[in-house]
Image 1 (tube, helix red, strand yellow):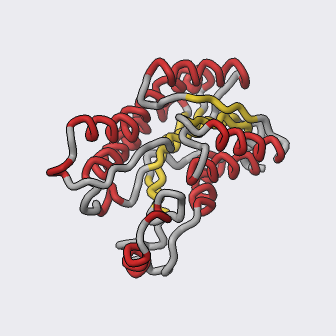
Image 2 (cartoon, helix red, strand yellow):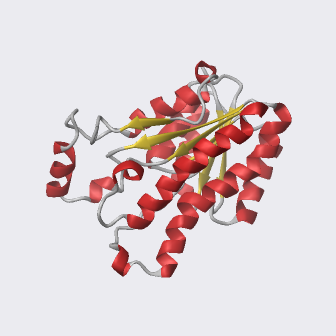
Image 3 (cartoon, helix red, strand yellow):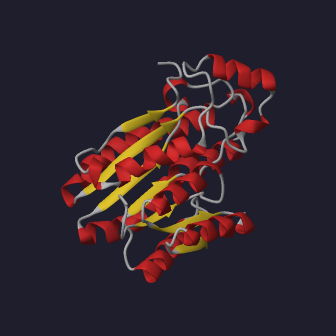
Amino acid sequence: MRLRDRTALITGSSRGIGEAIALGMAKEGADAIVNYSSRSEAVEKVAYRIRSEGRKALAVQADVGDSDSVKRMADLAIEAFHHLDILVNNAGVILWRYLAKVTEQEWEKVVNRNLTGVFHCTKSVLPHMTARNFGKIINISSAFAFHGLSGSVAYSAAKSALLGFTRTLAKEVGPRGITVNALSPGYILTELTRQASDEEKAQLISDIPLRRGGLPEDIDNAAVFPASEEASYITGQVIKVDGGWKI
């Protein structure tokens, strides 16, 4: 088990990619703090599945866009597990809207959840990681950070900024034994993307050399690697998990 005796906090882990990462890390030996904003029943099911793997799990409600809420989550995690080794910044929200129709409130919500939330969560766990001279931070960006997609300007902007955050933080905390990397998922089959029309799905898949959408498990496999000691000399990098989309 590559993550034996590690504790991981995965934000936005009641469903989709976050759920898959939490379960994948549990299978590799990690105890987990599973975070949710409003889906308490769903996250308890995730926690139950983690416990069925023989690992410990703690479900914590927190809005990553609210610093006080995030601090409370970090405090509960330390109280329960005494250390935090891995942080996966996955929580976020997407907005399908052309810029001309994006309101200031909508812009602030998307940036707050996808970028400022990463700031809050990372800043809350860093003192615990630096005290032990060890930590693994994994930020979930998006293929849209590289290619953009009409109608996703706020989301694409926030996910692009997250790459700069990743590379710069890696330089700041590297001397303390902490690595910071990012994953860039492409078209992943989740509850959100399944809402697209058959025509939209066909168009997306036609641009992917592997001719299929990815599964949440494809992301969890990619997330375990930078969280493990196998990646101890890798930091400031972005791993694309997109089936070769727009190479």
